[in-house]
Length: 339
Image (tube, rainbow, N blue to C red; front, top):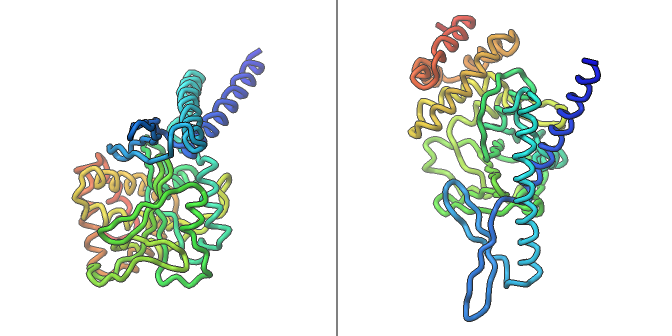
């Protein structure tokens, strides 16, 4: 009898997990939003209102009753229904005692994005997935501990100069449904789709004052220049992963070193804490893996002396933001003979 009950529970868990993944993907693709109408000279016009980072944006759709307006209203109603079902699905999973509820779903929309980079050969031409989504890959595939954290940003770093074939990735992202967002301050371009934002990054030259036009014609993107990205780009790790396919990320050693250097320079306390927290959990995983631990030492030795000092200083500050972090970092350095 127990075996029959276990089988039923397993089947229910499998169903609701698959349903959750499907619903999250649909919400990401269709986008949350509400329909707003405005009256101009006696005619109604339809707008789609969305919230992004605490601000409201109204996108013009078309005259009320037009094909575009009817289509937008239909998808808004669908998304509302998907969100209601998603809440019910998560509740069901919780009642069934599902573990790893905080584990990130790699939805079809995101899989398609990574597949595009593989099809165009960009993983082999210096492109890397970095930032919080890279950290999620570590969590889902490389034994880094899970904890609740959500992000809408997907960051890709690219080696410059780009030496691959022209692929116009920007135009392809727009065909996938992403909208361009221009930053007038520095000429960079981001890509938005519902609650997801894609940003391209490149290594900054010196203090950044001599940066040229960020637009890369062969890729149809305009990356943001950031310091210390070479630490990541010079230490790639290419894997073929279940559910994701081929992907290039920085080595865990490079990620750890980079996060510590960047965290200490942050002015935003929330971002500083997030960087230290991610570095802390990666450090804990590194201590359990001799090869990864050795990788940290290799990245550290490749740094300029000034950057080595910056990293070690930062690691001593981490405990102010993440309890227990100082001790974990100290254990890493002692294992490598760095202190």
